Length: 397
Image 1 (spheres, helix red, strand yellow):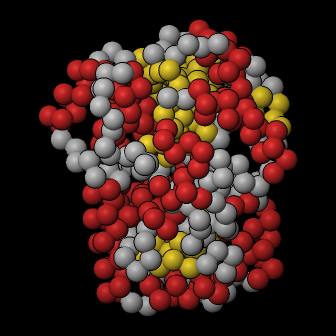
Image 2 (cartoon, helix red, strand yellow):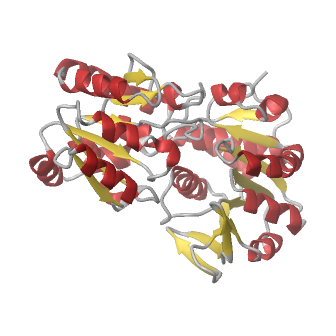
């Protein structure tokens, strides 16, 4: 593991000072999602490290616009229409072409962004962060695999959050020599700070045994199995997030008669999230497919010293929170196993404390934002040729 120190980071900054990096994602906050959360943390951290950062992403509407979010200039290309969940943004081509950048850093899966980059003719050196395979839309995957391969072939480095995802990805196996393992990170202190009064209010309303889950209400998050499990859980499930499946999930709650045990809160402001994590007794991630490649929300819960119940996906999810260390891991799509694991933790205060404290130590040692930034700067150095020797850390051999 690469340990971070201010002195070491300053030395590396000397070789990448004033480096211009264009980050391209599907969306950018305040749009909610794990990739968007990571992208914002990365951009703001790089900016603090004296990197000139700009962002191109899709707009939620048909008009292009420019924003400045926490000092980061964000160009949002107007979305004319969607193909399944992919925004089609022709103006993204112009925005990428006009960007003055030494490195173009694309966050996949964002097929429209990769197409726009390839059509733009931009000469910047390409880095890709490979967040996830395209899993559900098999016909869409067949259409875009040739385009994805063009991008991967052109890339100088491919950042992947875990080694396990490389080994289980059909397409990444062919690019092992270009892959660099950099786990996603977060600012732990951001989640350690919250008002005690806010935590108390949440526990008075939803406690005393709160099961928290956070994420978009979409197909691979497994919320239907979590809702089904609540008929056997001696506690209250609070779900934070919005998405197309909300009405279906709310109907499931009514059909099962668990309305007193399940609450859908919708979206919550980022600055308020820490209080919800601290009020919870256990955090549940019930995802059902490898589209859930990592589960950043696990890190957020671990930063608040909360035990995790997750699923044994062939992705980075069980790597983030290992079974028996920071929580319990159960088979996906198994509501009975979810219920048993949640009850096991809720019923055992000593186990909750043991798992929670282990999670906090793990997130501080392996997933702190500064470690992620340090490793990303090393990749940028390598890509720009500032560092002749090959990387020892993060390279897949």
